Image (cartoon, rainbow, N blue to C red; front, side, top):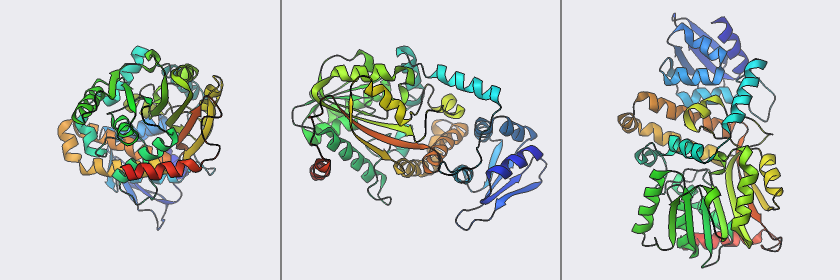
Length: 411
């Protein structure tokens, strides 16, 4: 325990962490913080501490998933929040993971290889996360199944309100006109495409690589009586043809991979009309380029990578797409993930019945860790509005607020 004691002592200075080792001995780490509840964990066997010291993030995650790191007081969200809050991205401080140079070099090389998302690999990666059963997503998402960062005009808003506001916020930036053709790259379960058709009288083609999402999206279009105007196809963005007045992509760019960024934007430029508008909504990182953590790569989003703004802009500017507007959503995803985590915890029995306790622990670790990354780490969301012609949009941003109000009025 001496080694892990030293490591935890560096990581937790404010707030109380109590560790019960495999022999039943109690170790207190940190100092009381009135604003942060105490967390107590139990290490079920002697190897847990070694696993965490050897590979802090993945080791801790797998010990928790396997039931070998047990939360006795508090929950996994409280544990992760306690550790991440002590090393907030904005402040100098200890790092959760400090691998030796050889391990870091190997990890970086492996991460770079993992980012090559060719067509067949992209489909496998998407299926890993999205084709695990629609029932799970019904249990923690909003009714429209928006599986991306919501937009909180007030942190106290409901998840449903914030997701509705997100769709209106994006639609306003698209500057839609009736009868236009819209391409939705990474359409999910169809909510955004159906919304744009309903509020703006546009025709939409939504594309996905998930067969389960495709089935649901097509069913929803048929039930709404708009399948002639809102179509969904199982197709890679690289294989789309035609010209579109507007392109929207929400929560898909994280799966493209840096080696393919220029090709992605080159394809979008070729699909976008001369006077077209594109809106890219993606998770990003506030610092420079980095790597995807081992837990996320292994268990959640294989092949996924959250880009730095510099990586996005460097690729898009190389194909002469003009970034007409860039907005950084700094805390919105933390608020979103808190809702998802709370709904997941409330649905524990249903999730365990669908899968098992191990899956439930993995999913809560994923949501809790993601929330902490947006609350204390370097993660954020970017909304980047692109145009091909500098004269396409009004020269001030005033039109956005007016458009958003009009869209809310239409519902």
